[in-house]
Length: 120
Image (cartoon, rainbow, N blue to C red):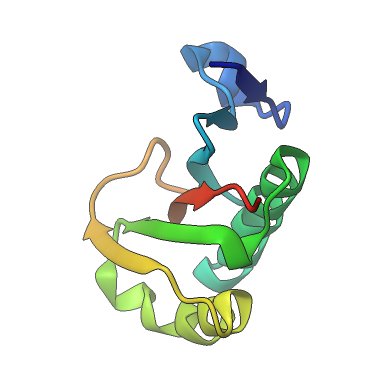
């Protein structure tokens, strides 16, 4: 099996020793991804943009995502992201889980992880 590793060049990738995404066995696994911005909505959009680039490099898109996990330090901040997420996944909503937890740095308000199936 061929394994393809995709880097986004993020600072944590080298520090922690991981890559943004791994393509293996017809699947694309995208690591938990935080974004930049002053609030959860801006960070959500930024995170999705980084994920979209990784999916594209793998040969997939948001339409191919089958599972998504949202991690937030404050679950009450999740609702403002709902319209963005509904627009992003459109007619192809994946299964989803939201977890309230601590993130690597308090400045981050949301982290998003996805798994996609490569289109044939």
